[in-house]
Length: 107
Length: 394
Image 1 (cartoon, each protein chain N blue to C red):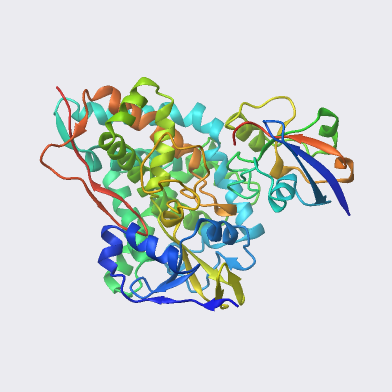
Image 2 (cartoon, one colour):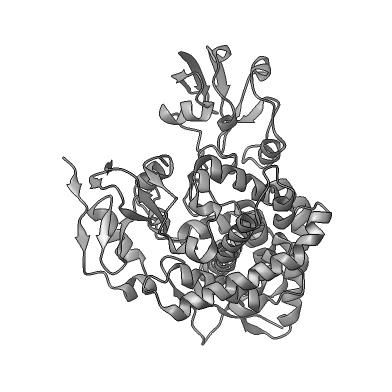
């Protein structure tokens, strides 16, 4: 099962990818060569370089933020906003089909 | 068709120890993996190859049944993968979280730095290796671990060095092995001395995090993981302090910029870790016949990931051999990558880039390299200045 995601770069450039349900949003970005997701620690929530900003309507379809992820986000290179998450912690589900995911200026 | 791993016989071990970068350049040009006879391991030097390896732990494992590290330190999280690694990693990372670092550890690290500088600031000259960087790293680690505060910094340095020597003891020298075991025994004693307090009262230290971890840790797990933190957590902050200071003192224009805008100290630290990665190489084991870039690897091959070389890969970094705080922000491999990404990254950023280095430049007026004593640097698996003589106005 796959869904379509659109990553929107800080400069407005769009990159539509097809993502497998179950993989993380970070993995979907990396495996499709999306610029703007670095993911130095490859999903351990240790580096804060896969910061992405999600539409608030999607937040109910995501696992609750852990204290650890929350803390990391405070130190992301681009200041967090409402909807900011570490994309490595967000599994793709059916609800993500057609989602637009904003990328911050810096990782 | 992918070729077999080529061999290079003409890279001397002393050459690697003195200055590995010319050899790294040659190896990187040659192939994705090269057997370097003097190092006795297949070296991987290209940025993209190392990223690929760190994202494919099924093919390139950290576990290694015959590892000297397991024999000396016990089976730590650094030689585990997947679930087993994750539960133990989780127990240490609470202590190293950026928010905890900023709120809890930063004032403590500031106090250490202040005390050390006060000890020599009227002298006008010193060698920053022993006067500052080594005790800064050692006292910092003592606090972070939650050891008793009466542990001598020289003992921490000695245990750390003995463990690392024993882990790299490929000639099986019995004296080196014995020193490694003795260091592990001393560390075990320190754990026993400090642990009752941490079991009784929860606090942000590593020992407390382990004592109160969700998954119950055996004493062997605690000992092995503390050994790894002592063995691997001392030379990196020490060496990155020294490299950052050396690089700024050698590049007056960049130093002027940093003095003008203090936020750039953090950038100087990050660039120093890219430029001279304190851990220049670490091993992985190939789990099945697999192609890496342009070479064919075989099951059981030992490969050494030279992040020190990848951090100077010209396909990733322009003018890669230069220290340049103004280069565009670009992820490097100084903290590794993947699940074993350095757990101490955030505390290192704080200790070195926000506290120790800025405080040195603030307190020591007109700090400069010594006019007659040379800076020395050494190493390739671990690399950094071994002496940094400096002078300032008093």
